[in-house]
Picture 1: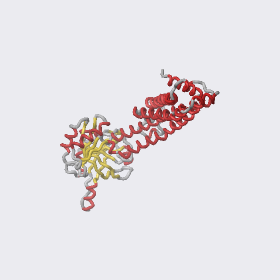
Picture 2: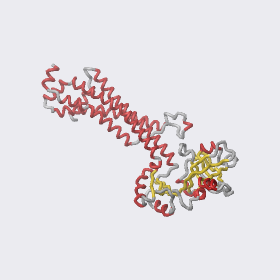
Picture 3: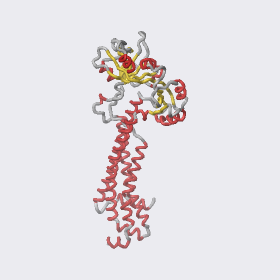
Picture 4: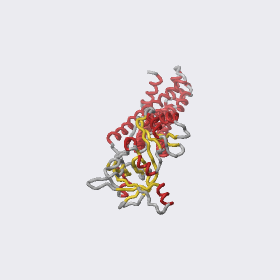
Length: 419
């Protein structure tokens, strides 16, 4: 074993003449432990919430979307679909039509509402179907030749529009598109062309942007908005969500940027995801102050060790130990404090995180209002590595001043002062 490391270990573990030094050292090590553990637990919980929100949004948003750059819709949908399906990592691609319309109900408790209508291909349900709360994601025409519609759970219950259940028939609703309203206003003698639908299901995604969304079939949406065969865009599903950026780059090379815009799932909700990432790193910076305070304590405790051991340092230098080696002894001591504190913090933080992940020790307050029962946890290896490296590095940096002070001690003066 390196003699410098052995001396540093003895200085750290040996009994002190001044007990305050041991107390300060213990406080420093405890501070590092608690700081590392707090960082791991908090970041894991924030990662968990990020994953929950992302999965909920991606249940409605595609992994990659291709739209017309000028907003006029896509006319050559078949050739674009063929090109998308030939791209690596793309497992499914489907066209969609989206627009705003007035949702009308009869006998509902709520007033008629303006909603965002999304028309999807019923044969490609896996690319469009959100998690359901009631009924089924069924948009096809039934025996009475009436097409189906799927509403948000909150919107459906508020308007009294529910799917068939317990012998009760499905609620009937109507959609009146914005172009149809404009044509009616210009011709007062024309009756508004309201298209009738049966409510087949309610989906359960929550959020301000999803509360007013409804689903109908692609053909019905094209007729509702009179798109003349055009679609709003193409939605893609991938074999791996993390491949979205690579697929976007591949499509951008094949498509003209003047005609088409390619967006990933992150681009579609960029402001929300950016805020969540900012909150994560903001919390990291605040909790990192615990480790920084512990590092300042390390400076104080090691400086007191240098003062206490100045005679030993003088003897070592008289025996031929160089100033660089004396400096390394105290750098090793700072590294030992950092290694022990960081190691204990990693064990404590990861232990708490995995206990919450698998046993849900801390439930969500008012869990009935959420889709999850306990605080979600997602341990990211990169976060753990960064936390460990930063905390250990701070402890080593904190030892630089005491180490430099120890190496500057003059052997003769140190022995004379201690005599």
